[in-house]
Image (cartoon, rainbow, N blue to C red; front, side, top):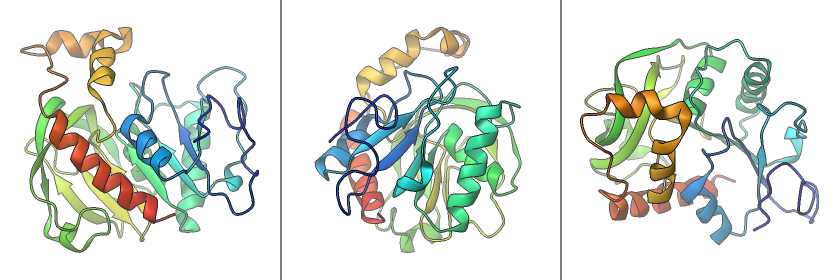
Length: 245
């Protein structure tokens, strides 16, 4: 896989290779990358590029050149009046209108919800750590989640969202009702983090942006607590998402 820091940087450009499908992931901080999702894409020989619009002077990607868009997490709010977030919301709206595959994770899910007119607001509690994910009856017929049962996954968020009009509600947790939804057939929002690896969790705990959240925890996070279950679930769900391409 040709994975680069920015679109077309350090590798082939997004249009190279006849019929080649490339995926573009929008980062919002450098330490929140695609993790296990990048590994699944690599095994499928699907090139991944990153866009870092939060960096001053960042290259603006040719979004139309990509088969699918991923919007990752970050410590900011989807409600923040930032020009690069407004641009991402515009691209999400366009992608949803054309039924292009979109995957929003944590902040990315909130951006997807907001782009479709739903409200983003503070969750009653911060959900940080390992908590069970419960699937709704609708998930039984969903492309990504069919056949899955309650499973522990990793969470790190303080905000949540209302379901967009026409969205299919797919998952919840004890502390957060809206954990996953689908719009149309190929646009997904996941509030939880299937993409994380133990080193990613450990690094997040050390980042200055997360220090306030870490100090509020009752006990230190164990990055390895449900590593095997999360790896198996992420391989399955992200593999199914790749099939949408």
